[in-house]
Image 1 (spheres, rainbow, N blue to C red):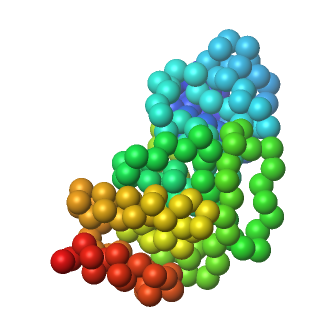
Image 2: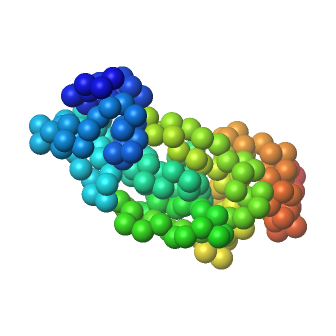
Image 3: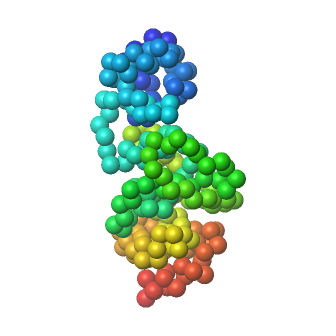
Length: 201
């Protein structure tokens, strides 16, 4: 595919809504071809080496997809994960991301973010990859997200964690057994156990 000249060619090649030049270099798209697509309005430059396919319709999750494209190793978590999973009533203005405790904090991000640090099993347990506008996004599962809300209750508020727990179980986005297991792995079981027991009575 050495002669890709349109944004539709990029879409057909599996390029997500947001991409960086290095993501399309294997397709044979040169820097000059990319700039031509920008000049023609087929591709939008978002800044900091991040581009967007103009033809793709925007969604409310676009900001998350854009940030995930810029920081592919990060994990969407807490309030942003609640929003993606449609749990509770939170509508955060910033994208909540988790990165390795030892990782360098990302700079020049295309949107406002709040960073938390994970380590050990926290980086993998209950973390899945799902596509948002063609962008692979690492995100915590509903059960893991609820547990994280209790882990970070001092940062987001206990009321938010309790709402997330009630809504996740009520809507069957997460089973009590899944939440209990995640709480055990994340070493927060003693904190969340009374709330789980209250739901069961």
